Image (cartoon, rainbow, N blue to C red):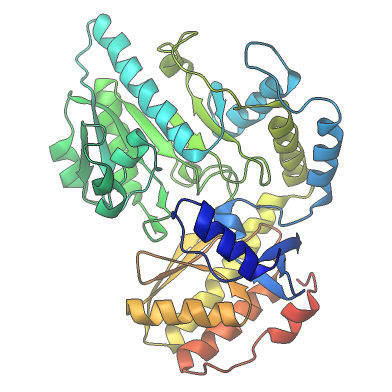
Length: 418
């Protein structure tokens, strides 16, 4: 099928949940996506932070081939070797004790919210004073299921489905006094992203996160770190909260764990895990043999090839190039982020939309969020020359050159540069 045939079929058959760009991709190589006409695109979004090792990575291809010939799916009523191996690696990386595997970020958050409510119930039975309320942050995004969307701040995600899960109150972003004022023994958990993703790549302050930790410890409430976008090496550390020296009770992760296959996880302490017993929660597909095998191959690649060190190095270079643009162009209001979770904020939504469209015309894929923010979540295998292609193109666009050619030759050739 060609693009027009696919568009026509989707218009007739699919629920209208996405406004797709008019491009039909058929394969990928490294940091490039390739459309039906053989045109190459530099992908600086990686499937919204999923394809950490890019496309057609040999470690992932090998793991899929080997495991698919053995066992793809197995009911969670039985054992397979992958879950324990993966749980050991993830809990060690995150300073946690136990893991639960699911299929996506929103499922991980849903499980974490249920865990917090259940844990508060256990503590109440032991004489503690803990309620059922959650505190989340303004500009937060935690998922699209009924619990996770209830903890998501933007009204456009929640209001069409009202009434969503009750018992969530939002705290002003990085406002320590507002956090203190809204926290009480009614709260069973504070839920936050150390670096807000959908909210515009906004890091919480060290004071705010430290205060959240102190408050929860004072009552026995849980601190839940949403690491779905910022975790698993995206910022140069295994988890974004590790930049702050704060250890949460629960962490949720998903996106890049299994190199493009659906896999999510909840990590937690032994203390929090006391609240869960067999039959309380579960999943049909979560933590299947194939997804676990690929996740282990991704972890091996990270460690064998020092990928996190590379993320730190290339992320510093990337941010530096964006900061150069900020110094040159008054239309750039801010540059934010860590590692390869970066953003540049422009002064109007119109300019951000124009820049997004112009970059796509030049076959560079990025994302716009919070109206004025260009978000960059590239594969971890990105090179400096790829960053230069983006920076030169964006420089032309902000200068007003809508017919520029920066980077076109490198993208067309598809060189694995850098």
